[in-house]
Length: 101
View (spheres, rainbow, N blue to C red):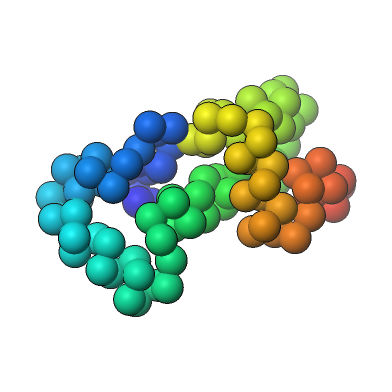
């Protein structure tokens, strides 16, 4: 996930991840559920949020909108991005950006 960054694909599915990792889908699902206590989408969105936070910390919001960075990081809707970001960080994306300054 960290090296190849498949989470940047907004159409990433557990089937596609299985192909990339050459690991059976059921093993990925079992690993996520039993070891990490997460479902597939929470797992992937966690990487996406970390990508966004990293890019905001690097100052990319000066050149791109927060939503543009989110879309480039694998989210495909504003509503899901805002919901997941706040659920993960406890603050809205704009409040997070302000906290960096």
